[in-house]
Image 1 (spheres, rainbow over the protein chains, first blue to last red):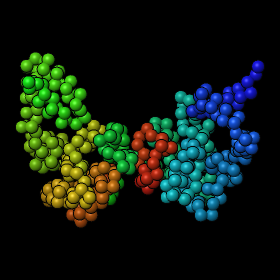
Image 2: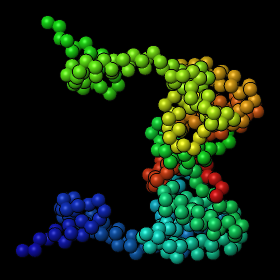
Image 3: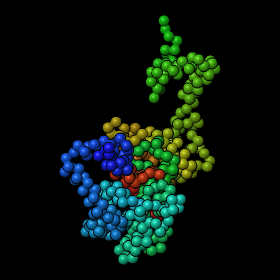
Image 4: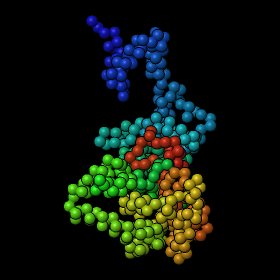
Length: 196
Length: 196
């Protein structure tokens, strides 16, 4: 006899962080729920896939094209912050200290994983500089080996175009203790010291 | 009947991170050990208390006065790195990137805990600047509220004396992901961005 909950349970299992048991628990919850509740979830998923696309200007995830950051009247068009993934934008927006534009690379340079400059949205970034409005590019790739390599590659590519290229600060996190800082971070914190 | 291991066990219990059971296990280990082994530990502890003192120049923990960093012929006498505690020096020495002098404050400014400027080794730091050799003071207090307050206090005090005052870099630690950075650290990383 075919089990009615088997198919939805199998599909739910593919979600990240959801295993066999959780998937089964979720499937049974949906079976117990009213048809409206279950269908509204199904529709929300379908809507998300239909409406959400990537912004053709900055490659952010958006439901309007260009995205809100690209057309926002209060956004500063003279600065572009370059990030690896769209979700990094959220981390920067939370600070409420940045009001410029963004550009999502779609990853970092990684020869081992076959990701070269052609696989990243670099050409479109250079296109965006042609208007002459952009004065500063802030490279906010992750401070690991691949993110640093990407930052150096981009700075060599962009500086000759007459734009200021900066890198986010690497160092001891706020609230941390020097005692627990690893050696490389401590080294970067000493190198990156600033005038007070 | 008095227990022969009771007294050493009680004393061992006062060490940090050592509770009732571990203290008892250590006491029994010492009882089983040869008299030479047990006595060598006792002597090492006595020696440490007799020989180790604080350096009269920089307040580092040392067995020679002035300490090795203060008299080392290869150390750069033009830079002083100011830290809260003596063990912070070890974190900086591990980077092998700094070869200047140190100054241990003995804590940070904390009005709530009754630690004002008089309780810290600040007067002696100003004394050290009088020779005119020192060109830069790197303030490496912890990047928390009290450490930052101490850094600002020191910079206001030292800058009028004609010395360059810098602060270690605060930001995303090396190898970390932007996604896991807290908002304040992300803010500091954006503020503290550097020209590439």
